Image (cartoon, rainbow, N blue to C red; front, side):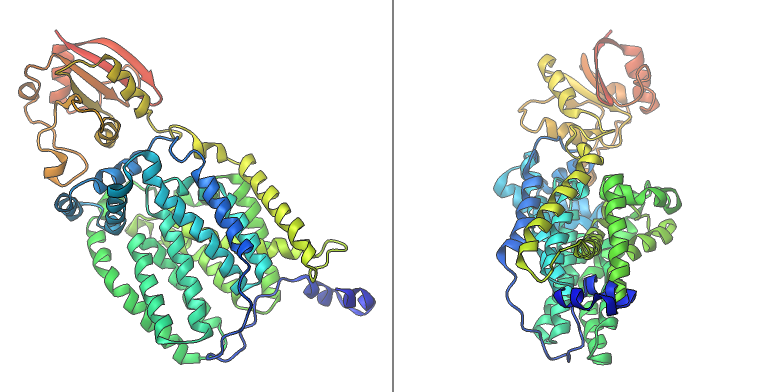
Length: 520
């Protein structure tokens, strides 16, 4: 920079801009030559890792589970044979995650916190890998900036505290991309084999993650040296990695009707960025910085911009375009694209900071104010956005099954039964909330159990009067509007309850009403 000041009057505008561009690492070396570089200082990757871990652990067990998490708990607590029976009918694409969670629960229990900690650890690991990836693609400062930005995006904390596989998808995508870069630096059988394993892992944790392979292809094509040989190595490794995933693809397609509820791509695409970041403010701030980074990286004459753009933008575009066939366009399925936006935003932010008067990028002293600025600014984004909903209990729009169940348990009597109306899978929620009760009220109108049926819900009783014989008190959990508590029940069950029972007590909670019905 000192040289720049000395000859500033001789530089053109284009040259002045080039002085502040965060340049990607040159990849002009031969394909057998790996660059020698000093190890990444521990503080660089550890700071975002610890920050992500801390934000994920704060209140990790405070929020009660929601519908998808109840499904994870139910599947993961089945016996191995019952889990296999369930997967024959539904959720085969989540089989690897359910197996992992089953083993975890066996060791650490099934509290809300215990169910979510694996995701917290995976997301924290992803933040550390993002720093390493940023250093490989740019430099240490961009890696650190990207890790800090990623850590405080509200969506990252939201799904770090989620008993579903999305955090593992982020971790697998970052690990695969980082190992691909190492294989491109120096090709070897071991590295390509490792990459193939990670491709399998991406598909195993969540099939949508495999759309990142388009960005990996762009990375291979824009890497100098190796030519057709390197392309064939990548294609072979990717194909080998995809082979074990093919059964999940085939069987998952056969079960695709279970996600037919997802809205069409044209209906959800306008709201995708705020949904992806869980905050409109954070979304447009990070994407705005990302576009700045995209422009500046392109001025550096590298394919890095193309790679990151493919990573960030192609997966949602592909899913939106194929929505009528695949029913997969939903923001949480695309969580693995956030690292790409974080890298682009970090590159843009570092380039803008370098333009500040007197800011010497060659000095080590700039790192502290940069880290402080990034942390404070990114945390402000999360606070000003919709980050408060991350820790809401229950989640906005979800029934408060915890409070509803607690109220019932204060008034329950031996021999009481339960009935349900209006909610997609109420039995899973009640089963979880009552899992420690030795004698919970029985499900009056359940015929074939969910376990024997191989599903998340049991079959309804065909002759309700027979099923309800001798039951004088029934607790009805209804998520229909007040005054319409029986509207969505099967007609035979509705007629029985309306004609032979009266409402003795009723209590309203968030999005659920509990009624105590007494036989007339």
